[in-house]
Image (cartoon, rainbow, N blue to C red; front, top):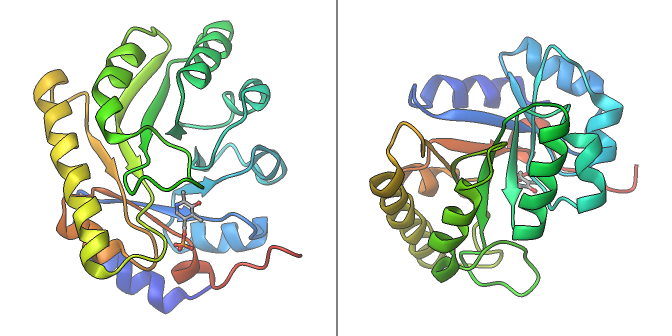
Length: 216
Ligand SMILES: *Cc1c(COP(=O)(O)O)cnc(C)c1O
């Protein structure tokens, strides 16, 4: 873990921006170390990994594509699902959360760069999707999440973040800024651009924990 880098980021981050430490592929020991350095929310993209590293003293966000058959296992453990990307998933979260009487904060994942290999709701479908999700009593839609374009230029990335910001403000006008309060965008490579376009939740993995090794 890069403690110096992390403390520089923490120092420079505006007070209203939430930092998610993306700990996927990293060990519980590394997570403990990040916690000791002030990280409070950890982002994971696999249910199995959350189960293995789970610690009730920390906050966990699901940030990766979630299969419906895993919803039951993950809803008791996480404080937010940032990767809501289909109506069928919303229905399953509603069903499983109703059983345990939990209202789940969720963010709608937008496939903002319209990439075929990515999940997420297309921009033009977002308003009606959010409206549908608002009718589920055990879902609390709190905003939007996106992953910037993979091999985009700075201009491409900024164009995407700009569109996200417009959509975010549209939703705030529709449902209120008390309810729609998170715009989760920005990763290690592009978080400065995301902050420039109104992000208030950044998800940093590599820059905090170093390169991921998927073959461990
Ligand atoms: C892995 C991941 C991140 C962190 O990416 P880095 O480039 O390592 O900062 C953020 N968001 C999501 C959805 C991810 O899957």
